[in-house]
Length: 65
Image 1 (cartoon, helix red, strand yellow):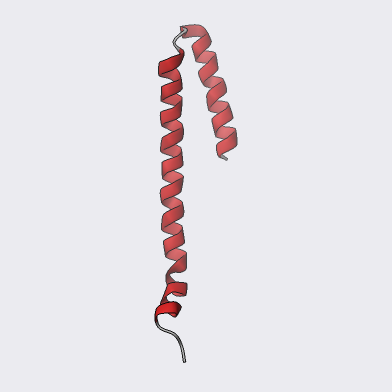
Image 2 (cartoon, rainbow, N blue to C red):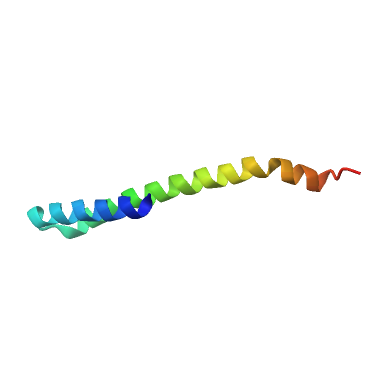
């Protein structure tokens, strides 16, 4: 997912740079979008890990005899 999104986003950025000749603000915008996507995925992954580990952690804290 992210590899395709990054390559497509960079291609679109390069096309806009070719017409505006202002690479720095456009690369910054592309980087900000990528960082926002990464942070969202990271937050979702942490939430899922905590959610799926609840039963496992419960067994560790309260062992069944």
